Length: 459
Ligand SMILES: *[C@@H]1O[C@H](CO)[C@@H](O)[C@H](O)[C@H]1NC(C)=O
Ligand SMILES: *[C@@H]1O[C@H](CO)[C@@H](O)[C@H](O)[C@H]1NC(C)=O
Ligand SMILES: *[C@@H]1O[C@H](CO)[C@@H](O)[C@H](O)[C@H]1NC(C)=O
Ligand SMILES: *[C@@H]1O[C@H](CO)[C@@H](O)[C@H](O)[C@H]1NC(C)=O
Ligand SMILES: [Zn+2]
Ligand SMILES: [Zn+2]
Image: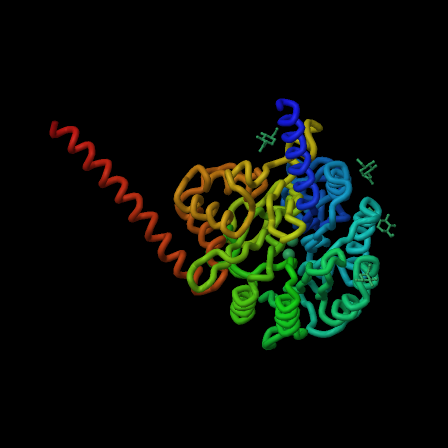
Protein backbone atom coordinates (compact mmCIF):
# COMPACT_ATOMS: atom_id res chain seq x y z
CA UNK A 1 0.00 0.00 0.00
CA UNK A 2 2.75 2.44 1.00
CA UNK A 3 4.68 1.47 -2.07
CA UNK A 4 1.66 2.05 -4.28
CA UNK A 5 1.23 5.47 -2.74
CA UNK A 6 4.82 6.54 -3.30
CA UNK A 7 4.74 5.37 -6.90
CA UNK A 8 1.51 7.25 -7.29
CA UNK A 9 2.96 10.51 -5.94
CA UNK A 10 6.06 10.06 -8.03
CA UNK A 11 3.81 9.73 -11.05
CA UNK A 12 1.95 12.89 -10.06
CA UNK A 13 5.23 14.74 -9.68
CA UNK A 14 6.31 13.46 -13.06
CA UNK A 15 3.08 14.52 -14.72
CA UNK A 16 3.25 17.92 -13.05
CA UNK A 17 6.80 18.35 -14.21
CA UNK A 18 5.80 17.29 -17.72
CA UNK A 19 2.96 19.77 -17.53
CA UNK A 20 5.25 22.68 -16.79
CA UNK A 21 7.73 21.48 -19.37
CA UNK A 22 5.23 21.47 -22.19
CA UNK A 23 3.30 24.58 -21.16
CA UNK A 24 5.99 27.04 -20.23
CA UNK A 25 8.31 28.82 -22.63
CA UNK A 26 10.75 31.70 -22.31
CA UNK A 27 12.00 34.51 -24.49
CA UNK A 28 14.18 37.61 -24.20
CA UNK A 29 13.14 41.20 -24.65
CA UNK A 30 16.00 43.63 -25.29
CA UNK A 31 15.73 47.28 -26.27
CA UNK A 32 17.45 50.66 -26.56
CA UNK A 33 21.10 49.61 -26.80
CA UNK A 34 22.12 53.02 -28.26
CA UNK A 35 25.69 52.07 -29.14
CA UNK A 36 28.06 55.05 -29.06
CA UNK A 37 31.09 54.12 -31.21
CA UNK A 38 32.95 57.24 -30.01
CA UNK A 39 33.11 56.06 -26.38
CA UNK A 40 36.74 56.07 -25.32
CA UNK A 41 38.47 56.20 -21.94
CA UNK A 42 41.60 58.20 -21.22
CA UNK A 43 40.72 61.75 -22.24
CA UNK A 44 38.97 64.56 -20.42
CA UNK A 45 35.59 63.67 -18.81
CA UNK A 46 33.78 65.92 -21.33
CA UNK A 47 35.42 64.06 -24.23
CA UNK A 48 34.70 60.43 -23.30
CA UNK A 49 31.69 60.12 -25.63
CA UNK A 50 29.82 62.23 -28.16
CA UNK A 51 26.44 61.28 -26.64
CA UNK A 52 27.19 63.12 -23.38
CA UNK A 53 27.04 66.39 -25.33
CA UNK A 54 29.80 68.02 -23.25
CA UNK A 55 28.40 66.74 -19.96
CA UNK A 56 31.31 65.30 -17.98
CA UNK A 57 31.42 61.50 -17.87
CA UNK A 58 32.67 61.65 -14.30
CA UNK A 59 32.71 57.93 -13.55
CA UNK A 60 33.49 56.53 -16.95
CA UNK A 61 34.68 52.94 -16.94
CA UNK A 62 34.79 49.96 -19.27
CA UNK A 63 31.01 49.39 -19.00
CA UNK A 64 30.10 53.04 -19.64
CA UNK A 65 28.96 56.13 -17.79
CA UNK A 66 25.54 57.49 -16.86
CA UNK A 67 26.16 60.55 -19.07
CA UNK A 68 26.93 58.38 -22.12
CA UNK A 69 25.32 55.87 -24.41
CA UNK A 70 26.64 52.29 -24.43
CA UNK A 71 30.24 51.41 -25.23
CA UNK A 72 30.60 48.24 -27.29
CA UNK A 73 31.90 46.42 -24.22
CA UNK A 74 28.54 46.93 -22.46
CA UNK A 75 26.53 45.70 -25.44
CA UNK A 76 28.81 42.73 -25.95
CA UNK A 77 28.60 41.81 -22.25
CA UNK A 78 24.77 41.98 -22.33
CA UNK A 79 24.43 39.66 -25.32
CA UNK A 80 26.89 37.09 -23.93
CA UNK A 81 25.18 37.25 -20.54
CA UNK A 82 21.88 36.45 -22.27
CA UNK A 83 23.57 33.45 -23.84
CA UNK A 84 24.85 32.33 -20.45
CA UNK A 85 21.52 32.72 -18.61
CA UNK A 86 19.17 31.40 -21.29
CA UNK A 87 21.09 30.05 -24.30
CA UNK A 88 18.09 28.70 -26.14
CA UNK A 89 15.11 31.06 -25.84
CA UNK A 90 12.03 30.35 -27.96
CA UNK A 91 12.62 33.72 -29.65
CA UNK A 92 13.94 37.23 -28.99
CA UNK A 93 12.03 40.51 -29.08
CA UNK A 94 14.29 43.40 -30.04
CA UNK A 95 12.54 46.77 -30.01
CA UNK A 96 15.10 49.16 -31.43
CA UNK A 97 17.07 52.37 -30.84
CA UNK A 98 20.55 51.26 -31.84
CA UNK A 99 22.33 54.58 -32.48
CA UNK A 100 23.69 57.21 -30.04
CA UNK A 101 21.96 60.40 -28.91
CA UNK A 102 23.95 62.82 -31.11
CA UNK A 103 22.89 65.48 -33.64
CA UNK A 104 21.80 64.12 -37.03
CA UNK A 105 24.71 65.80 -38.80
CA UNK A 106 27.16 63.72 -36.73
CA UNK A 107 25.64 60.45 -38.00
CA UNK A 108 24.29 60.26 -41.55
CA UNK A 109 22.50 57.40 -43.27
CA UNK A 110 25.53 55.16 -43.75
CA UNK A 111 26.57 55.37 -40.10
CA UNK A 112 23.05 54.65 -38.91
CA UNK A 113 22.84 51.58 -41.15
CA UNK A 114 26.27 50.39 -40.07
CA UNK A 115 25.33 50.63 -36.40
CA UNK A 116 22.12 48.63 -37.01
CA UNK A 117 24.26 46.14 -38.96
CA UNK A 118 26.80 45.72 -36.12
CA UNK A 119 24.06 45.07 -33.57
CA UNK A 120 22.24 42.69 -35.90
CA UNK A 121 25.54 40.89 -36.40
CA UNK A 122 26.30 40.30 -32.73
CA UNK A 123 22.77 39.03 -32.00
CA UNK A 124 22.98 36.66 -34.97
CA UNK A 125 26.47 35.52 -34.02
CA UNK A 126 25.54 34.70 -30.42
CA UNK A 127 22.03 33.36 -31.20
CA UNK A 128 22.46 31.82 -34.67
CA UNK A 129 19.46 29.51 -34.39
CA UNK A 130 17.04 31.83 -32.64
CA UNK A 131 14.18 33.61 -34.35
CA UNK A 132 14.36 37.35 -33.70
CA UNK A 133 11.37 39.67 -34.04
CA UNK A 134 12.68 43.15 -34.48
CA UNK A 135 11.04 46.59 -34.47
CA UNK A 136 12.54 49.89 -35.57
CA UNK A 137 13.28 52.55 -32.94
CA UNK A 138 13.01 56.27 -33.62
CA UNK A 139 16.83 56.47 -33.58
CA UNK A 140 17.16 53.86 -36.33
CA UNK A 141 16.58 56.41 -39.06
CA UNK A 142 18.27 59.39 -40.64
CA UNK A 143 17.24 62.07 -39.82
CA UNK A 144 16.12 60.54 -36.52
CA UNK A 145 12.37 60.00 -36.02
CA UNK A 146 11.59 61.04 -39.62
CA UNK A 147 10.04 57.79 -40.82
CA UNK A 148 8.25 58.04 -44.15
CA UNK A 149 4.82 56.54 -44.77
CA UNK A 150 6.05 54.75 -47.89
CA UNK A 151 8.99 52.65 -49.00
CA UNK A 152 12.50 54.04 -48.54
CA UNK A 153 16.15 53.13 -48.91
CA UNK A 154 16.54 52.62 -45.16
CA UNK A 155 13.49 50.32 -44.86
CA UNK A 156 14.87 48.28 -47.75
CA UNK A 157 18.42 48.10 -46.39
CA UNK A 158 17.26 46.99 -42.96
CA UNK A 159 14.81 44.47 -44.44
CA UNK A 160 17.79 42.98 -46.24
CA UNK A 161 19.91 42.94 -43.06
CA UNK A 162 17.10 41.11 -41.27
CA UNK A 163 16.24 38.80 -44.17
CA UNK A 164 17.10 35.70 -42.08
CA UNK A 165 14.45 36.77 -39.59
CA UNK A 166 11.73 37.91 -42.00
CA UNK A 167 9.41 35.70 -44.02
CA UNK A 168 8.81 36.79 -47.65
CA UNK A 169 5.45 38.40 -46.81
CA UNK A 170 7.10 40.30 -43.95
CA UNK A 171 9.77 41.58 -46.33
CA UNK A 172 7.06 43.18 -48.44
CA UNK A 173 5.31 45.14 -45.67
CA UNK A 174 8.59 46.00 -43.95
CA UNK A 175 9.98 47.59 -47.10
CA UNK A 176 6.74 49.51 -47.47
CA UNK A 177 6.30 50.81 -43.92
CA UNK A 178 8.61 49.10 -41.41
CA UNK A 179 5.96 46.72 -40.01
CA UNK A 180 5.08 43.04 -40.41
CA UNK A 181 3.16 40.05 -39.08
CA UNK A 182 3.89 36.34 -39.08
CA UNK A 183 2.72 33.26 -37.29
CA UNK A 184 4.70 33.15 -34.04
CA UNK A 185 7.41 30.51 -34.62
CA UNK A 186 5.30 29.44 -37.60
CA UNK A 187 2.86 27.71 -35.24
CA UNK A 188 -0.81 27.52 -36.17
CA UNK A 189 -2.91 29.63 -33.80
CA UNK A 190 -0.15 32.02 -32.74
CA UNK A 191 0.83 35.38 -34.20
CA UNK A 192 3.33 38.20 -33.80
CA UNK A 193 2.58 41.73 -34.98
CA UNK A 194 5.56 44.08 -35.23
CA UNK A 195 4.54 47.74 -35.46
CA UNK A 196 6.38 50.82 -36.66
CA UNK A 197 4.89 53.26 -34.15
CA UNK A 198 7.54 55.82 -35.08
CA UNK A 199 4.92 56.81 -37.67
CA UNK A 200 2.76 58.08 -34.77
CA UNK A 201 5.54 59.92 -32.89
CA UNK A 202 4.82 63.64 -32.58
CA UNK A 203 8.43 64.40 -33.59
CA UNK A 204 7.83 62.84 -37.01
CA UNK A 205 7.15 65.73 -39.38
CA UNK A 206 6.47 63.43 -42.35
CA UNK A 207 3.26 61.98 -40.92
CA UNK A 208 1.99 65.21 -39.40
CA UNK A 209 -1.29 65.57 -41.27
CA UNK A 210 -1.93 61.95 -42.15
CA UNK A 211 -4.86 59.91 -40.93
CA UNK A 212 -3.28 56.47 -41.28
CA UNK A 213 0.42 56.66 -42.24
CA UNK A 214 1.56 53.72 -44.38
CA UNK A 215 -1.93 52.25 -43.89
CA UNK A 216 -0.60 50.59 -40.76
CA UNK A 217 -3.73 50.97 -38.62
CA UNK A 218 -5.97 49.61 -41.35
CA UNK A 219 -3.58 46.72 -41.84
CA UNK A 220 -3.24 46.02 -38.09
CA UNK A 221 -7.00 46.04 -37.60
CA UNK A 222 -7.33 43.55 -40.45
CA UNK A 223 -4.64 41.34 -38.98
CA UNK A 224 -6.40 41.33 -35.59
CA UNK A 225 -9.83 40.73 -37.12
CA UNK A 226 -8.49 37.76 -39.02
CA UNK A 227 -6.65 36.53 -35.94
CA UNK A 228 -9.94 36.55 -34.10
CA UNK A 229 -11.65 34.64 -36.90
CA UNK A 230 -8.84 32.06 -36.92
CA UNK A 231 -8.79 31.84 -33.11
CA UNK A 232 -5.19 33.00 -32.93
CA UNK A 233 -3.33 34.49 -29.94
CA UNK A 234 -1.25 37.58 -30.69
CA UNK A 235 1.76 39.40 -29.22
CA UNK A 236 2.34 42.99 -30.33
CA UNK A 237 5.77 44.64 -30.21
CA UNK A 238 6.95 48.12 -31.09
CA UNK A 239 9.26 50.89 -29.95
CA UNK A 240 7.51 54.19 -29.12
CA UNK A 241 4.57 53.37 -26.81
CA UNK A 242 1.23 55.17 -26.62
CA UNK A 243 0.30 56.93 -23.38
CA UNK A 244 2.48 59.07 -21.13
CA UNK A 245 6.05 59.13 -19.86
CA UNK A 246 5.97 58.28 -16.15
CA UNK A 247 8.96 60.50 -15.38
CA UNK A 248 7.46 63.71 -16.70
CA UNK A 249 3.91 64.92 -15.98
CA UNK A 250 1.63 65.09 -19.05
CA UNK A 251 4.32 64.04 -21.54
CA UNK A 252 2.91 61.82 -24.33
CA UNK A 253 4.78 60.59 -27.43
CA UNK A 254 1.96 59.88 -29.93
CA UNK A 255 -0.10 62.55 -31.64
CA UNK A 256 -3.58 62.66 -30.01
CA UNK A 257 -5.54 61.01 -32.89
CA UNK A 258 -3.00 58.21 -33.21
CA UNK A 259 -3.04 57.62 -29.46
CA UNK A 260 -6.82 57.30 -29.47
CA UNK A 261 -6.84 54.97 -32.45
CA UNK A 262 -4.30 52.70 -30.78
CA UNK A 263 -6.40 52.50 -27.60
CA UNK A 264 -9.55 51.85 -29.65
CA UNK A 265 -7.75 49.04 -31.47
CA UNK A 266 -6.71 47.33 -28.23
CA UNK A 267 -10.18 47.74 -26.72
CA UNK A 268 -11.81 46.24 -29.78
CA UNK A 269 -9.41 43.34 -30.27
CA UNK A 270 -8.19 42.58 -26.75
CA UNK A 271 -9.49 38.98 -26.66
CA UNK A 272 -6.75 37.95 -29.10
CA UNK A 273 -3.99 40.24 -27.76
CA UNK A 274 -2.04 38.36 -25.08
CA UNK A 275 0.75 40.85 -24.53
CA UNK A 276 2.37 44.05 -25.77
CA UNK A 277 6.11 44.67 -25.46
CA UNK A 278 7.61 48.11 -26.07
CA UNK A 279 10.70 50.19 -25.27
CA UNK A 280 11.77 53.83 -25.79
CA UNK A 281 11.46 54.93 -22.14
CA UNK A 282 14.68 53.17 -21.06
CA UNK A 283 12.80 52.61 -17.78
CA UNK A 284 10.98 49.57 -16.39
CA UNK A 285 7.24 50.21 -16.33
CA UNK A 286 3.89 48.98 -17.67
CA UNK A 287 0.66 50.33 -19.10
CA UNK A 288 -2.85 49.06 -18.38
CA UNK A 289 -5.73 48.95 -20.84
CA UNK A 290 -9.34 48.73 -19.58
CA UNK A 291 -12.71 48.06 -21.18
CA UNK A 292 -15.69 50.40 -20.78
CA UNK A 293 -16.56 48.70 -17.47
CA UNK A 294 -13.03 49.30 -16.14
CA UNK A 295 -12.04 45.65 -16.34
CA UNK A 296 -8.32 45.17 -17.01
CA UNK A 297 -8.05 43.74 -20.55
CA UNK A 298 -4.43 44.10 -21.64
CA UNK A 299 -0.97 45.06 -20.40
CA UNK A 300 1.89 46.70 -22.25
CA UNK A 301 5.25 45.85 -20.71
CA UNK A 302 7.93 48.53 -21.09
CA UNK A 303 11.35 46.93 -20.76
CA UNK A 304 14.39 48.84 -19.51
CA UNK A 305 17.09 49.89 -21.95
CA UNK A 306 20.67 48.70 -22.17
CA UNK A 307 22.01 52.25 -22.41
CA UNK A 308 22.43 54.03 -19.05
CA UNK A 309 22.25 57.47 -20.77
CA UNK A 310 20.82 60.21 -18.55
CA UNK A 311 17.99 61.83 -20.49
CA UNK A 312 18.24 65.50 -21.41
CA UNK A 313 14.44 65.85 -21.60
CA UNK A 314 13.69 69.13 -19.75
CA UNK A 315 11.81 68.56 -16.51
CA UNK A 316 13.17 65.08 -15.80
CA UNK A 317 15.33 65.01 -12.70
CA UNK A 318 18.31 62.63 -12.76
CA UNK A 319 16.85 60.46 -15.52
CA UNK A 320 19.55 57.84 -15.89
CA UNK A 321 19.18 54.08 -15.38
CA UNK A 322 21.28 51.00 -14.93
CA UNK A 323 21.54 48.78 -18.00
CA UNK A 324 18.74 46.19 -18.04
CA UNK A 325 17.51 43.19 -20.05
CA UNK A 326 14.46 41.02 -19.47
CA UNK A 327 13.41 37.41 -19.85
CA UNK A 328 9.74 36.55 -20.08
CA UNK A 329 8.07 33.28 -19.12
CA UNK A 330 4.84 32.51 -20.92
CA UNK A 331 2.27 29.79 -21.39
CA UNK A 332 2.98 28.35 -24.82
CA UNK A 333 -0.67 27.25 -25.21
CA UNK A 334 -2.39 30.52 -24.31
CA UNK A 335 0.49 33.05 -24.59
CA UNK A 336 -0.47 34.26 -21.10
CA UNK A 337 2.52 36.11 -19.64
CA UNK A 338 3.43 34.18 -16.52
CA UNK A 339 6.44 36.05 -15.21
CA UNK A 340 9.16 38.59 -15.93
CA UNK A 341 12.74 38.33 -14.73
CA UNK A 342 14.80 41.47 -15.13
CA UNK A 343 18.59 41.32 -15.16
CA UNK A 344 20.80 44.34 -14.69
CA UNK A 345 24.28 45.63 -14.31
CA UNK A 346 25.15 47.99 -11.46
CA UNK A 347 27.21 50.33 -13.61
CA UNK A 348 29.08 51.98 -10.73
CA UNK A 349 30.04 48.68 -9.15
CA UNK A 350 30.87 46.96 -12.44
CA UNK A 351 33.18 49.76 -13.52
CA UNK A 352 35.09 49.21 -10.27
CA UNK A 353 35.57 45.58 -11.27
CA UNK A 354 33.38 44.38 -8.39
CA UNK A 355 30.35 43.13 -10.31
CA UNK A 356 28.66 42.35 -13.56
CA UNK A 357 25.28 41.31 -14.89
CA UNK A 358 22.98 39.79 -12.27
CA UNK A 359 19.32 39.17 -11.55
CA UNK A 360 17.49 42.28 -10.40
CA UNK A 361 14.06 40.83 -9.58
CA UNK A 362 11.32 38.38 -10.50
CA UNK A 363 7.91 40.02 -10.86
CA UNK A 364 5.72 37.40 -9.13
CA UNK A 365 8.20 37.10 -6.24
CA UNK A 366 8.70 40.82 -5.62
CA UNK A 367 5.04 41.75 -5.93
CA UNK A 368 3.52 38.46 -4.64
CA UNK A 369 1.44 37.63 -7.72
CA UNK A 370 0.24 34.39 -9.31
CA UNK A 371 1.25 35.55 -12.83
CA UNK A 372 1.69 38.66 -15.01
CA UNK A 373 -1.87 38.67 -16.42
CA UNK A 374 -3.76 41.96 -16.85
CA UNK A 375 -5.67 41.16 -13.64
CA UNK A 376 -2.42 40.69 -11.70
CA UNK A 377 -0.82 43.82 -13.15
CA UNK A 378 -3.96 45.73 -12.22
CA UNK A 379 -3.42 44.51 -8.65
CA UNK A 380 0.16 45.80 -8.69
CA UNK A 381 -1.13 49.16 -9.86
CA UNK A 382 -3.79 49.31 -7.13
CA UNK A 383 -1.15 48.54 -4.53
CA UNK A 384 1.19 51.17 -5.98
CA UNK A 385 -1.59 53.70 -5.55
CA UNK A 386 -2.51 52.61 -2.00
CA UNK A 387 0.65 51.30 -0.42
CA UNK A 388 3.89 53.24 -0.08
CA UNK A 389 6.05 50.14 0.14
CA UNK A 390 4.80 48.75 -3.16
CA UNK A 391 5.14 52.16 -4.80
CA UNK A 392 8.73 52.47 -3.60
CA UNK A 393 9.63 48.98 -4.77
CA UNK A 394 8.20 49.71 -8.21
CA UNK A 395 10.01 53.06 -8.24
CA UNK A 396 13.40 51.52 -7.43
CA UNK A 397 12.95 49.04 -10.30
CA UNK A 398 11.72 51.81 -12.63
CA UNK A 399 15.26 53.19 -13.02
CA UNK A 400 16.73 49.66 -12.81
CA UNK A 401 17.89 50.32 -9.24
CA UNK A 402 19.74 53.51 -10.20
CA UNK A 403 17.58 56.12 -8.42
CA UNK A 404 16.74 54.82 -4.94
CA UNK A 405 15.37 58.13 -3.65
CA UNK A 406 11.89 58.35 -2.10
CA UNK A 407 8.96 58.52 -4.52
CA UNK A 408 6.96 61.44 -3.06
CA UNK A 409 3.31 62.44 -3.56
CA UNK A 410 3.84 64.07 -6.98
CA UNK A 411 5.98 61.13 -8.11
CA UNK A 412 3.18 58.77 -7.05
CA UNK A 413 0.68 60.61 -9.26
CA UNK A 414 3.12 60.60 -12.22
CA UNK A 415 3.69 56.86 -12.06
CA UNK A 416 0.21 55.69 -11.09
CA UNK A 417 -1.52 57.78 -13.75
CA UNK A 418 0.95 56.89 -16.52
CA UNK A 419 0.41 53.18 -15.80
CA UNK A 420 -3.37 53.46 -15.38
CA UNK A 421 -4.37 55.83 -18.21
CA UNK A 422 -3.14 55.53 -21.78
CA UNK A 423 -5.96 57.69 -23.15
CA UNK A 424 -5.32 61.42 -22.98
CA UNK A 425 -8.61 62.33 -21.27
CA UNK A 426 -8.38 59.48 -18.80
CA UNK A 427 -4.84 60.58 -17.90
CA UNK A 428 -5.99 64.14 -17.23
CA UNK A 429 -8.82 62.86 -15.02
CA UNK A 430 -6.43 60.55 -13.18
CA UNK A 431 -4.02 63.40 -12.44
CA UNK A 432 -6.90 65.56 -11.16
CA UNK A 433 -8.31 62.79 -8.99
CA UNK A 434 -5.09 61.34 -7.64
CA UNK A 435 -3.58 64.78 -7.12
CA UNK A 436 -6.59 65.79 -5.06
CA UNK A 437 -6.70 62.37 -3.41
CA UNK A 438 -3.22 62.83 -1.96
CA UNK A 439 -4.29 65.93 -0.04
CA UNK A 440 -7.65 64.52 1.00
CA UNK A 441 -6.17 61.16 1.93
CA UNK A 442 -3.51 62.79 4.09
CA UNK A 443 -5.93 65.09 5.86
CA UNK A 444 -8.42 62.27 6.49
CA UNK A 445 -5.69 60.17 8.08
CA UNK A 446 -4.60 63.16 10.13
CA UNK A 447 -8.17 63.87 11.30
CA UNK A 448 -8.76 60.26 12.29
CA UNK A 449 -5.52 60.05 14.26
CA UNK A 450 -6.28 63.38 15.93
CA UNK A 451 -9.73 62.13 16.85
CA UNK A 452 -8.23 58.98 18.36
CA UNK A 453 -5.72 61.02 20.37
CA UNK A 454 -8.49 63.27 21.63
CA UNK A 455 -10.51 60.22 22.60
CA UNK A 456 -7.59 58.88 24.64
CA UNK A 457 -6.88 62.28 26.18
CA UNK A 458 -10.45 62.66 27.34
CA UNK A 459 -10.06 59.46 29.32
C1 LIG B 1 32.47 39.76 -25.71
O1 LIG B 1 32.22 39.00 -24.53
C2 LIG B 1 32.73 37.68 -24.60
C3 LIG B 1 32.24 36.95 -23.37
O2 LIG B 1 32.57 37.63 -22.21
C4 LIG B 1 34.23 37.73 -24.71
O3 LIG B 1 34.74 36.41 -24.83
C5 LIG B 1 34.62 38.53 -25.94
O4 LIG B 1 36.02 38.69 -25.99
C6 LIG B 1 33.97 39.89 -25.92
N1 LIG B 1 34.22 40.59 -27.18
C7 LIG B 1 34.51 41.88 -27.24
C8 LIG B 1 34.75 42.44 -28.60
O5 LIG B 1 34.56 42.59 -26.24
C1 LIG C 1 31.10 46.78 -37.13
O1 LIG C 1 31.04 46.31 -38.46
C2 LIG C 1 32.16 46.68 -39.25
C3 LIG C 1 31.87 46.26 -40.68
O2 LIG C 1 31.50 44.92 -40.72
C4 LIG C 1 33.40 46.02 -38.68
O3 LIG C 1 34.54 46.39 -39.43
C5 LIG C 1 33.58 46.46 -37.23
O4 LIG C 1 34.65 45.78 -36.65
C6 LIG C 1 32.32 46.19 -36.43
N1 LIG C 1 32.47 46.76 -35.09
C7 LIG C 1 32.26 46.05 -33.99
C8 LIG C 1 32.52 46.75 -32.71
O5 LIG C 1 31.88 44.89 -34.01
C1 LIG D 1 5.73 27.28 -41.98
O1 LIG D 1 4.85 26.19 -41.95
C2 LIG D 1 4.31 25.86 -43.21
C3 LIG D 1 3.35 24.71 -43.03
O2 LIG D 1 2.36 25.06 -42.11
C4 LIG D 1 5.43 25.49 -44.18
O3 LIG D 1 4.89 25.24 -45.45
C5 LIG D 1 6.43 26.62 -44.27
O4 LIG D 1 7.53 26.25 -45.04
C6 LIG D 1 6.91 27.01 -42.88
N1 LIG D 1 7.74 28.18 -42.98
C7 LIG D 1 8.92 28.28 -42.40
C8 LIG D 1 9.65 29.57 -42.58
O5 LIG D 1 9.39 27.39 -41.75
C1 LIG E 1 25.57 49.83 -6.91
O1 LIG E 1 26.91 49.89 -6.54
C2 LIG E 1 27.26 51.00 -5.75
C3 LIG E 1 28.78 51.00 -5.57
O2 LIG E 1 29.21 49.76 -5.08
C4 LIG E 1 26.50 50.94 -4.43
O3 LIG E 1 26.77 52.08 -3.65
C5 LIG E 1 25.01 50.84 -4.72
O4 LIG E 1 24.28 50.66 -3.53
C6 LIG E 1 24.71 49.69 -5.66
N1 LIG E 1 23.30 49.69 -6.01
C7 LIG E 1 22.53 48.64 -5.82
C8 LIG E 1 21.09 48.78 -6.22
O5 LIG E 1 22.92 47.60 -5.36
ZN1 LIG F 1 16.01 54.93 -26.75
ZN1 LIG G 1 13.29 55.73 -28.73
